[in-house]
View 1 (tube, rainbow, N blue to C red):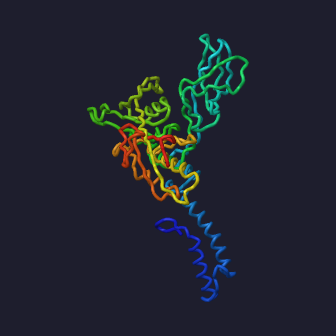
View 2: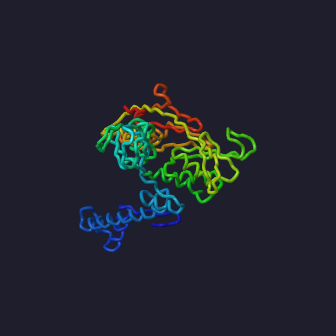
View 3: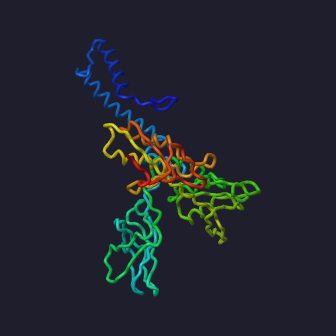
Length: 393
């Protein structure tokens, strides 16, 4: 039913109770509605079918609100403020091809890592007189698995009639998996100022709309003297992820005229009139978090329970799971409160896995100094862990 408090679904027990009451009103109090009587069986079948319809009604109602919608309906809500769920992105990078000068490399040449992560070249190229050429590449399969470290792309997929060697001097970047529901809800809440301009909230919303940006915080100094390391009349964006040039261009389009964008990274952006602007922003550092948990389990603990515990911890803190999935986790701390890895919240995340009766948990920023309390994260830093940094026994 729908009232001033919202929608309340009728459960199977509620429906059967109402139908049983009506049956006794029509046929008399002594009518048999037990689970083995013909009428009782019929009433229960109808109550079960109706309960499924009520579930669907509840889902329809919940799909209209960002806090309760899931999956595609949640993405549809984002269209009302001009954002949509981020889909998988392919990683990009550059390989260096070495061989005889003058040899032609055709667009679509496929190369791979030892783990069979395949990339292909984006344009034709000719090896220069110096015996090498740099060629842009893109991952064949979208997802975070395409983000590989420098030096890992070494093998050819396509046979070549001449001898060449390949490598990537820098890691490939930009690959991401589909945005999760919690990630989208967080971005939705922080993107409500997208339609505005010249405010820190609107700069944050604009940056969060960039596909590869995972998190950002924009501070400001409105005084005429330096404050907290920020020059007078300046904004100071702190951005996690994303392309430097795209970030700088978005800041220039959103910030007020005459206001400086300050940060450790500076990028030159040319405006529509051909004028050059130096746009600054900063990148957060990483605070590595190590976790050690000893579990006391019972018969309900699943066979892959230890893996589920590791994943639950990584989802809360943030970092890379065993399958390569990157979770945002805590992200950048709020300007007013800073950032903490909360000890009890890790316990709460672990307890989502069934069959755990007790645990001993210790966390720390090094593998040798673990504690049983919260960890404060420095300013301009994000907490991060990984599958290898979480020990479960």
